[in-house]
Image 1: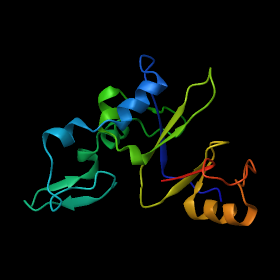
Image 2 (image 1 turned 135 degrees about the horizontal axis):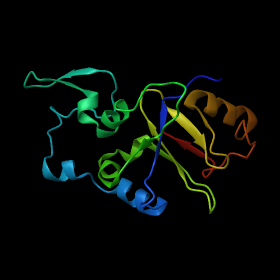
Image 3 (image 1 turned 180 degrees about the horizontal axis):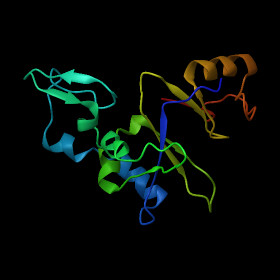
Image 4 (image 1 turned 135 degrees about the vertical axis):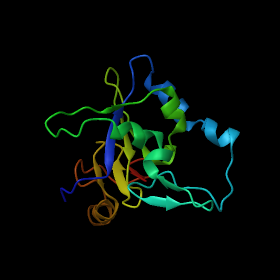
Length: 163
């Protein structure tokens, strides 16, 4: 289908290479090293537009806890103007790598980076053509057609990526 997927593209500044960004993304965030939280008070950072009440009775929004969502909210909502979110090294370290898709293209093209905003809506991606699909629709197409519905590449472990 042609539904909107819960993905937001972000770009890297010119001083960060794609490989460096991937290494930064896979590092343990500094906040987890300095201040580990107990499982009873841990707030899910991947929620959006939700009000979370902690044990202390404080109310927080997901935008306050997730630096990517906070930065994204500062961008204009003008539909005529497309501006991907620019992330720096600190923001890459703070991101959850399980919510990021990396579309790798051959040199000289730069890789494309996407962040899932609503993790409750799983997304699948074909690694050959880098097209995104709703997870359920992608799995059904893989079963029915034995491959990607867009590029027709045969299904194998290197073809699909689900988040």
